[in-house]
Amino acid sequence: MSTGAGTARAIFPDRTEAGRQLAARLAHLRGQDAVVLGLPRGGVPVAVEVARRLDLPLDVIVVRKLGLPGRSELAMGAVGEDGVVVLNHEVLARSGVGRREVAVAEQRERREVELRASRFRAHRLRVPLRGRTAVIVDDGIATGATARAACQVARAQGASRVVLAAPACAPSTADVLRGEVDELVVVTTPADFVAVGQAYDDFRPVPDEQVLTLLEEAATVDPRPPAGDDPGRDEEVEVVAGNVRLGGRLTVPAHPLGIVVFVHGSGSSRHSPRNGAVARVLQEAGLATLLFDLLTPGEEQDRRNVFDVPLLAGRLSQVTAWLRRRPGCAPLPMGWFGASTGAAAALWAAAEPGADVAAVVSRGGRPDLAGPRLEDVRAPTLLLVGGRDDVVLELNVRAAARLRCEHRLEIVPGATHLFEEPGTLEAAAHLARDWFVSHFPRAPRSAA
Image (cartoon, rainbow, N blue to C red; front, side, top):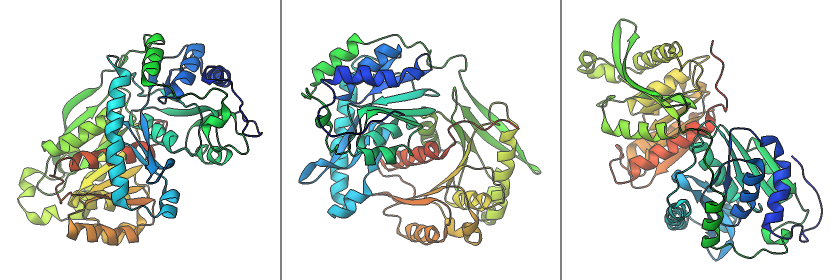
């Protein structure tokens, strides 16, 4: 990364010249499997120059700042495509803004994100990011809220590597962002930089019409076909676990980033439309999924088996070992997605020494049933609970207090235990997707 110190006087005559200088710092990306993504609106003229000089495909990545009530210029967070939301907890703590105000702002700006994404792409398809380097370009970075959201969107869309680039960036923000992206590239970090406009002689607003024109003029044929030579696969499988055979459905998209095993709770199965809906959200982000049944139909008749967490955890470990012998699955980072008693089984298995799991998600789970082992879980764990699921919410609050691993308790407003209310299951699926994508290693491990 190259930086320069100085004052906040104007450094660039306009965004075009800034893009040329930034492209020079990004020359090492020429010829790589990368996509340049401009942040509308001001980042697009800069990104056009970068894409043109590096001969890379160009697209946009749409995010919106969540302005602080009464001080809209100060970002309390940002939202982006695919349901991504990033909050600046330090700003929120200082301002005293409540969750309701944040939710109102998020809903308003999310609608704007959808409208802008539709308009800026017009009739063009989104350039695929799965397995590629995403080069996110803005005309400058002050607080970094929108940049963070853009990076999370790129990861959610399957980017294997994220490069964040801008002509100018606040020094303190640059220090933080270096630890959040694979590479940060800026031309200069002026010492008293507080607003992007300070870096430019000509900082006129960029209207939507200009963005559209620039994108159309820069339109190129993406040199990489959407799925390459690997079409992926979707098949029914049979997993041998001890002396029983368990049915499952294995879906592996092209160029998978990792694999998530669904650990069903009582009354559910691999054929559940709800489990299938969540699995599709993960698959669209480039994650392989295995939906399998922990118990045979005969075993399910005995309710004691449904709550036999050690038995269920043992089955999960056996299925995981089976996946490691499966062609194409062996090197992938592993995640477990559990619901109800299945979540307890996932946490119980994750507490085993050397457990083969990179991240765990519990939706409406019963972590209390894994109580004796909660302190031994090492995998990053996300606890998802409906805001109206009072009993299970309390159980999860208590369980979260006992977890020693990296963890987060996320409450989905308006959801009851089964997440049947409109939009709640989708919200939970997006949160799970983001957790897995952000916690999976960026490069698959080598096969044993």
